[in-house]
Length: 165
Image 1 (cartoon, one colour):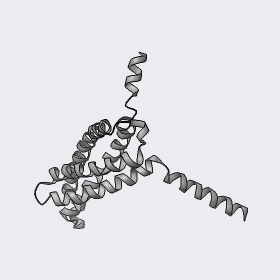
Image 2 (image 1 turned 180 degrees about the vertical axis):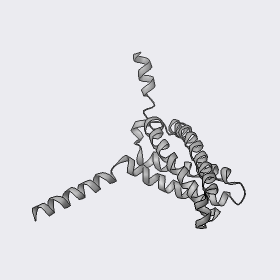
Image 3 (image 1 turned 90 degrees about the vertical axis):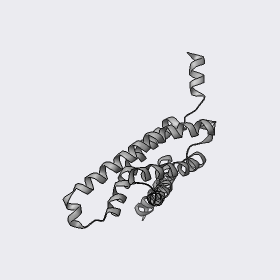
Image 4 (image 1 turned 180 degrees about the horizontal axis):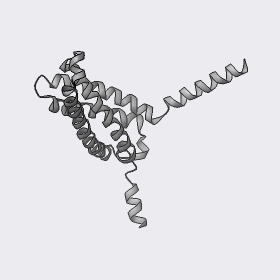
């Protein structure tokens, strides 16, 4: 009985720590942004081609992700200025934008050329969705690391280093 109680307690503590994890909170924020990204890409495709729609969808998700990240994920004490954090967040997002768009277009071309995909009868819309999600996955990793170590870093760090050096 003690073993089961100890195991359940450890499991509960693991789950509690997981939900306090900055990475998991960022993952949840990115999931919401991804939903905005995907839905808006479908809307933008009514007016633009796939590549432009992926880029515009990314920008839409970018604003949602920033709003959630600066409020719930990265502590305000770490970056002091929301304006500077937004500029940095946007610079990192530019890298993520190129990663996501490039990967999505690349994967779509691979899917369209794959004989297995045509044999399975996967429609063009599903191919676009798969390609878009692949692009989002690659940009997620780039963005998390960039935001953690650049966007929401202490903005006074450089000032302190220049005074000491």
